[in-house]
Image 1 (cartoon, rainbow, N blue to C red):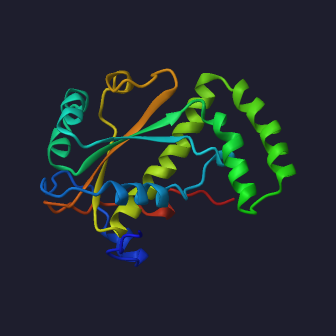
Image 2 (cartoon, one colour):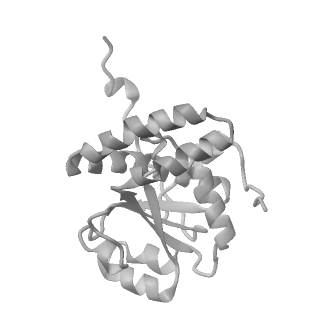
Length: 212
């Protein structure tokens, strides 16, 4: 079942986005709608379509208690949001290459020959990447997902706050994840706003651009 959107006007979504730090704690987001939003946001591009983003959705009292000491000065979001979404990048995302390209083939998006060719060419390259290079790839791609998710959340009538201030070296292990495989990218709080986010000034593009 598709959840009716609160708005589909892109300008309203873009201009209305604010970083919200206090939410209506009584509002829960159904798991079906959360998955729907994640699927919608996953239309974001990624390098060779490897989709390295992974999600830890923290919504239970126990999960929030585990998260609380790891998020420094962002505890208000943890206490009041519908959920805290920890986005990780999967350093072994290329292991899904067969599944991804087979899915594309099944839907007529590429030939089976093309799928085999891409898998044979791409997977060895990814396996040879240094850890730093792979870290860069999954973080760039997962950040594209995160921005898209924030806009998708707005279309569903929710607000978000991207959080970078947390204990990156501890968060995977705290939730029983393989810390060598899953690298934390950011945390997104999500819920119904119970405060008004403030507008902020943006430098004009003409001051930030070079023309050649």
